[in-house]
Image 1 (cartoon, rainbow, N blue to C red):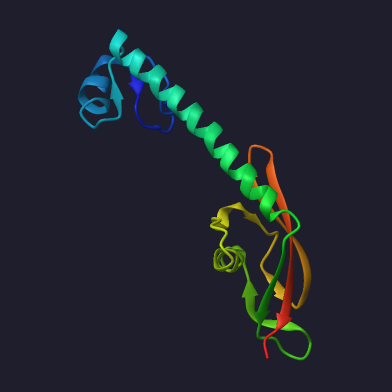
Image 2: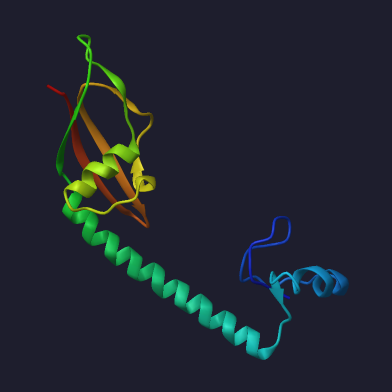
Length: 146
């Protein structure tokens, strides 16, 4: 059968697996998890893989342009802090993504790499990793909110 969805302990979506006839007929096929291998389904699988590959290439090009624009960008976030420069709360990837969105960059928080949430005022280098070797480093300054 060709797996239509990833199934734990069996395989990934798009893989061809040999399973017992009863398992395929009574569980996988009725639940839309697999199809029987035929010439037609093999062609569909090849087309699907080609589309995924093309989409990945386009995504890489899109992120390459964004990474170039973002590289060496300086971002300032104002936050409430006490006298010892400790923030009331913290700055995390979601907050940074929100600030970038306010500047016109639509970036998901999952691309922003922080070892841990920022809890002190100061300057930080933040890595934005889009995968497939597309990276940008922005300078983030956390200043006291007046």
